[in-house]
Image (tube, rainbow, N blue to C red; front, side):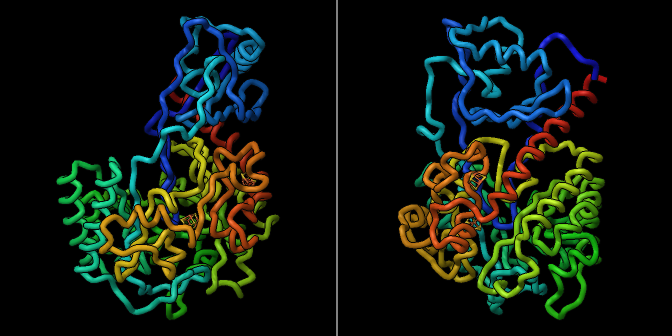
Length: 481
Ligand code: SF4
Ligand code: SF4
């Protein structure tokens, strides 16, 4: 693109923006707040907390905690305009070019306005993990489950869905999101079909939106199942941790055989049936080096993906090869970013490339634990996180399981970034929020400490932001051609 003397701003379109997904079924506490309008007196300032990285000599990428639309790319003339508007007493004409974009991207705000991000805001989605079975035909090296030979029954499934929608109605949620999980949920596939019918009826009765996704290892997907999922509009997430041996080492069959061939074939089968499977990639010290090859495979198929960091648990504690070795993880992901640069996707990268961080929209907590997230085990016991199913705080027979989850003070505590040491002064806190609370607790014995992966996050955030800037620019260039 030729250098321009007039200010230009580029942003991702709404269809490019990606929702946070993940192996752990975290519900992103989505909030919306009114976009500030240019003030009548014209007096403006730059909101605090804006992050800024130079992409090249002409373009800069900005991320504002006040933005609800991800990052913005500005040319040098726009950066100069922004700097002028940051001077004391600066005024903007409502008619000025870009005024609306600068406000909607959170790069300007009225001088007199100071609203706290979470004032009166709450998520509109209630998310639930349904543990369809504890059985699995894989034995992943990092799995946190005991693999009991226990399935959820139809009766328990109905009771769980009923209580989920009870809580949704009591708390006025506009949308319910169900994750059919396990174990391997396709081992109990008929139950998913039955619960889908019931959830659809409940959603219709209460007038709430319904979104469903199956979290699967992929190995049991058949042409018939793929076709049904497509027709029923049930989304599919498949876990794939590497290309060939990198995946096989992480995710062997229970009998010990390699699973890559079966899983990669399942991805192709899903695509053939019109499904766009979401690829969930768990990154460990053992698999990080294989990321570039895997991402090339994923990006060539234009699939959405997310990178989740390995979380140590009581069953994986002796697998030291999985440890989050900072150098290995950073090198592996930076090399993977080189591949992404060559195959820039159509979807935003801000919610997919660094573990639980979500740079699409500022937020205060890492996940929906204790706020808008329910985990139903195979017996209908309700806990706050799928990694704490042994600590239930409610059941599917509770009148309002969400209220009990929100009140609980004994289990996992999902603090705001401002309540965590060091995160409270960190410039990335609005998007990182300190990482998975359970991981921090395991590392430090307390919930109010920063993530043990902090150094990795801080090294990668600027690179991820620049990558998204390049992606936005490439889309803008395409549309200008
Ligand atoms: S974990 Fe580290 S990068 Fe994340 S908010 Fe806390 S201090 Fe910042
Ligand atoms: S506490 Fe950690 S593992 Fe549990 S839902 Fe939140 S981010 Fe995921």
